[in-house]
Length: 200
Image 1 (cartoon, rainbow, N blue to C red):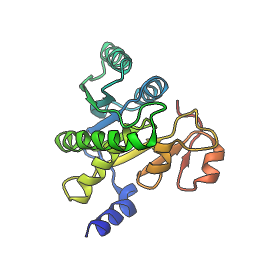
Image 2: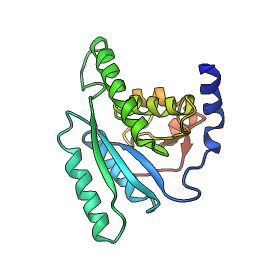
Image 3: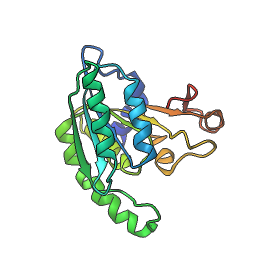
Image 4: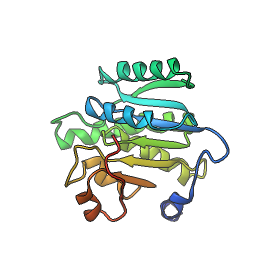
């Protein structure tokens, strides 16, 4: 039963179009440093229909909240709706963290992600590679598997990834509804990917 529901969601995911009749509640996964800068650029290119916006960052991330608040303040100044929240979950994997210990930290992140996503029930999860996005996307998939809500998963691989996918990308390539890459060599290696040139 679980497998058949998962297969159905993955097979028909791209047919799901949230927001056709109104606003799109979007959960935005922001990583530290370059990931946050890129995701903010992506958010700046989206229409005002993507509202409210729920930003999720790792609990050890010291920089992203300020960048997000600055971006949202600029939106508000320009007259665009600025309905947003900033939430934190445990980081899945720190830089240079051992693989063995990252299993436990990833489980901790997943345990925090499931109740968060179930409470927010976003229409879409937008992410671009930080490890934190994997448990959040898994929680979004779980909502659909349980028949509670269909959540669109949109993954945009970082501009830094020219010939190989990030670890998050390698995982979510198989589970995302839309998977964007920003370099042609990746499109050649991963046929499901969508290549539109540079997005950020």
